Image (tube, rainbow, N blue to C red):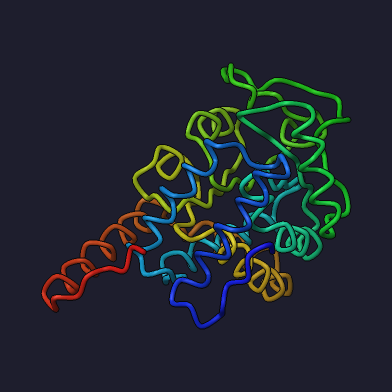
Length: 260
């Protein structure tokens, strides 16, 4: 990291994430629009208190169970996710056996290759993207519709992070189970996914790694029960209720949020 941030800084984690994104931008992984998207997500992270809450943990557990049950699970990676969580993506791949595919809205072949190289340099064993046989997701005209035949196109489960609603809707129409990491519980992505993890991407991925190590010991029937008992509408409602109650409590206590 080009700028040394003291761990004692009250905004240490957020500042580290910002620096990673700036470095990712300079390396051609992240586009300017991705920096804007991160700021929006960071604002929601302030609202939930910058911790993995129970509603997020429940969604992460269901997502891991669904991933372990899948015949062909794929972790979809965009520029922001690669810049922020490359090592965590590699570890999640190793513990679950999922494929990893680069999928971009602001797509160029050079950017896809740069992200692939970045992921491989951080331990991802194999990355689908630039050299794959391609298909197009029906009903999705943006470059996100360009997918690998042996990856997202053939997947029965897709984990998406820091996403857009159009592709989540297209994936659902294609019959795939979609788990989304999205700090905004009001987004179309959050409301369309089968499982929505209202958590910061790095925290969520680390949590899923720990959960995968535990859940791999369960029987298929136990994993199925976890997925069947999960209710995404209830979890999204719990996240909104948490935000409202937390803000109300802070207002009553006369405490202001640190938005530095």
